[in-house]
Image (cartoon, rainbow, N blue to C red; front, side):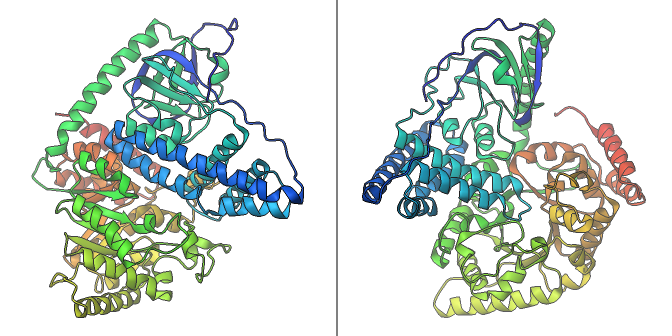
Length: 604
């Protein structure tokens, strides 16, 4: 989109500090370059019955043009860093699908005929209705809902700009070393940014979990989003300092702020270099105890990040990516191909595949037919995870078949979500073994010993029944996110109660301890795959409770490894016993902070 410099006004040049959301670490020092989209004027337009077919054809042509634009944008990805390519390619593929025979275009065509609306008006109304329906879904993953609604609106905007011949944002004239500011940057805009040219990015809108934030992190561009008031206060050419680690932007920085920023820039570069050296070092305590560090995988695009982090495998592959944003269920072969690419990319490191965990917090169009709705008063307590799969065993059988077939290509494990009683594992195992027998009869090459079948421990019931579940399962993975939610009856995304969500609540810690000890008594592997695993401050406590396997976001692995390498297991055990004697979460946080401060030392 064309950009015009804002008229220079007599604004004060006194140092001003703005705070936003830290989304991509790093420090930038440079001049401001502002960019804004030309507003798209969409007056409500009605047409006569005689114009319907012509208007529909106009919409079809706009969709074809938009598809070409997105396809052309995708061809540009090969000049971006590999992790940025892997992040954006699936999103652009989703855009291309939405510009095909999607619900958005079908609905817009229907509005043109039924309501007599002009094409751009029909697109706007349909996009807003779909986005509103997404946002109204009862879902724990509010950030995910916002992303999906944003994707629909982005495609709507792209179609409307094509229909109204409104130019798109242009980023070609951003000078070398500039800090780009805007009201909003879309993921498609982010794909046009050159990390060798752009020093930093700051926007008024956006959040830490959106595609734009993920793209900026993948590109390695320091960024602060949600920085309200910045675009109004700044003018093109103003000097600024941006800290993507703290979420701070300083306009007209004084000498002290500039000196601090230069020192921070040098320190950040040194820290990244030192953390990078940890990749090939073992996650081993000072007394020789080895800890397995694995990565959680949401989408295949994260594979390059996992390799860079030095993960020892994938401890949680969320298979939902195969079922989302598509009108039909993936068949056995489609699932096999997806798992095979991941298993082969891991080159012999184990991959733990969690079977479909639909319900409560997720919405999948492909499962809309024949699957009971999960939008009741308490969707998180309804038909989700293993409950749904046992009710629809054909889903489980097809997924088991794909996983078993891929197990001949590399080590895999299978994990069952939302287990609450031993019988659920037993029923799933019966299906698992039946599918294996069927595959062998048809000539599929399967390992003599089937991949382990494990259970996620993510409800208080599962933790308290861990002794009995351990008799049926081959391994445990403790999902601390849901475990804390169900234990404390708190939705982290619900503003009024989010402050009550606390993984260090004594009840949560006791359930983690109970499940861990149940597994250790059976000499069975147990790991943690929730957010607690990726928090370096909590590593001493988890090790002290007996855990030796942690799975986390790939970006957290270097810092967790750094924390492990200064610990002594006996110290961790004594610390854990002290923590488990406490009944006050605030006191537990104090102990955790004090122990971390005592053990902290520079990376060596």
